[in-house]
Length: 423
Image (cartoon, rainbow, N blue to C red):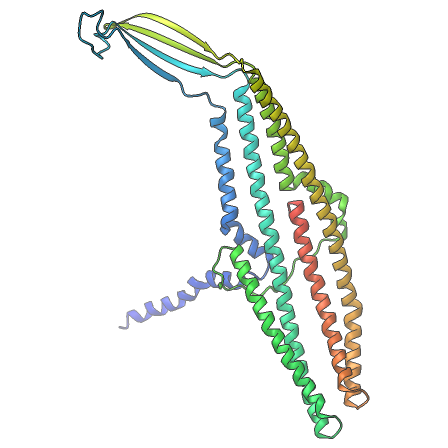
């Protein structure tokens, strides 16, 4: 028994260390956007599916440029040897046996074009994977910002509830001294009930946002998440210049990249379609066996004759139209993305100015008004309704500040989705 005690003690000492990484991850996941993005990159099944599809597209490149498999044919001729014997399938007993080895050869350049098309399609698959990640990252960033907004509002509501409890005590003291009416106490209690009801709604919204984030992370809906304790810094105004970001959108946006890949693929497809005007070949080599010996050799050349000109011209017109359609889709995507970029840049600037106004003007003025109203109420110079109005002004100012911060984060997430990279 005495020998087992040190072992048990060692196990007890090591047990917390064994679970520390798991507990650390559980307590830190969700505190910042970076932790959520790192987790989602390795766990989200939608993004994983797009990566696997991109890998599959890469594997199509080599087969696309390969020659077709050769073909082998055997012909047993004169099975009865001019009626001298019963029919047989033995190569050494029939009149002759012809072996034919054939290889199809496309017209010069067709294999290279097919390989180039496969390479471009693989690049497009990689672009679609990047686009999926950009969309997923934007959704995670927006959900995290909304969670931060709800948590800060919940914290603010609890602070206001504590303040109303203190105001109720002041009103009760004044009512007990005959300096205020009972209605002041009742109004304070009504305000508290309203705040508690709002807290219920905020808790429900917080649970929904956590379930949404866990869904994006491929975790159980009720899995724990750390409090969203900080937001990402908003880039400086110089980094949010439209002209600079426009160039980045045109060069790095995954959707535009995919549309450009479709254009290049359509161009190669058109070249391949026009090469169908020229014939393909089949070469064959044929040894002929008589009884037990090879006594003859033949060489065969087969060529297909492209006589169906109306069909080929229709295919060529189709390839021309598909190329024009791909170019039009790229222009439409670029126009839409740049319009969204301008919209979000305007919104993030408005959110920045709103936050500055709330921080430097509205909130200090509201706090000054409330402190003045509180002192005046204690001295009987203003009524309780004036004090409540001053308290509401503080709350509105702080809500405006939090809302502006959250709006800026959501708009930043959209801008980064459009650009295709973090700013």
